[in-house]
Image 1 (cartoon, rainbow, N blue to C red):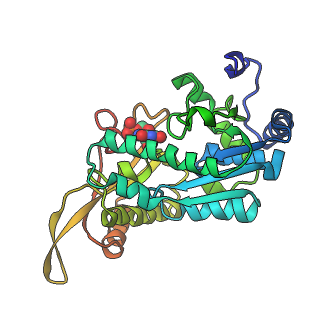
Image 2: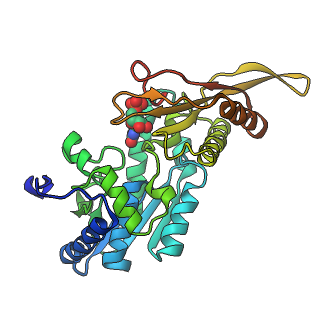
Image 3: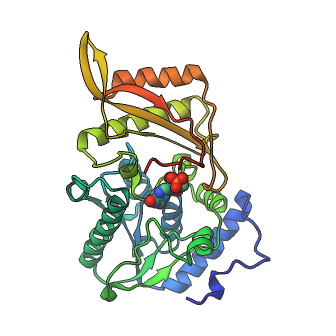
Length: 328
Ligand code: XMP
């Protein structure tokens, strides 16, 4: 790959309409067929916008020559692995290998409280699981990646959060990166034109280490469950109340401490849930969304009555800086 093909031509029109997206798709399908020929391609499909769009493009271009591997590291949001399976295996008829590696990841993470250590474990284990799956498949020569233009501009072409560039020597494949010259908003327009559901195309950013950075300190299964359930309630309420398309990123955090509460006339010793909802252009700075107080109260009521092990709900009012968006 030369540096030149990693540079967006100044004449390249911004993809803002369905017609422009269709033209891009037609041109990329042709280019992908040329590049791949009759070879087999492998893709780590996280279910995020970029890898989903790459999968849909490749399915259109080379169909069953593509194998998608979806690794569930146990730190995905509620319903995410099911959606990947439904959209790609059931609706698009793709070759999809689904690996439920939850126990492997959670066992490796048990007792690890340091945030950077947690990230390293999740990243390294992801590569290990992906490598094992790649070795089971015969005759793969190409590796597709959802690299987008900001990845090239910001990190020298390396997709920081789900790059599988750490594969060993004997598993070095030819890279296939059909959206590497596109900005995020263009990837979304292309995804929509490819028929991907809005919930995938308009998905808010989700960090590679997933819920792992929101279940602070050493992750436990019960606290992770409280995190997943409270996050699902927040997402459902934001969707119902017209905030899902308006707020840039929103999620819950379950910190690793307990506070006293009272339930059914008895004292309890449970976790708090923190709600975070921020707006930003580039994630370098962020402001806090002004959620209507009545909605905050409603979400609080639902979390307190539906989520096990929680007795308190807080709203994080801190902008970035000096707080970061994530808690770890
Ligand atoms: P912070 O917390 O640094 O987050 O204000 C800025 C944006 O980056 C996302 N983020 C990550 N994404 N791997 C990722 O892929 C990570 O380790 C990671 N940490 C933070 C965060 O969700 C926000 O959108």
